Image (cartoon, rainbow, N blue to C red; front, side):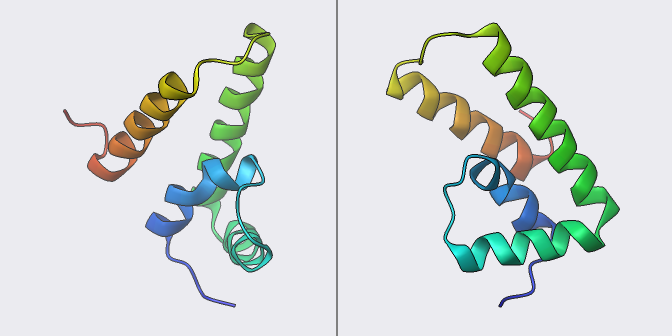
Length: 83
């Protein structure tokens, strides 16, 4: 088990919500979220956004669009929302 910092946890929260991580990574993030209110709030927001998207969209986007959206989300997370 690796102790994750907030930046790493927030970077992986999307993959965590979509079950795209291995068991060790899931355990690491779960442990961090249980002990970090800031990351837990980000997780809750990401979960809310994902739920809203699922409700609003009933078809799967093209893979290329999904990849671009994920890349933009990661860029915003890394740069703190700056362009």
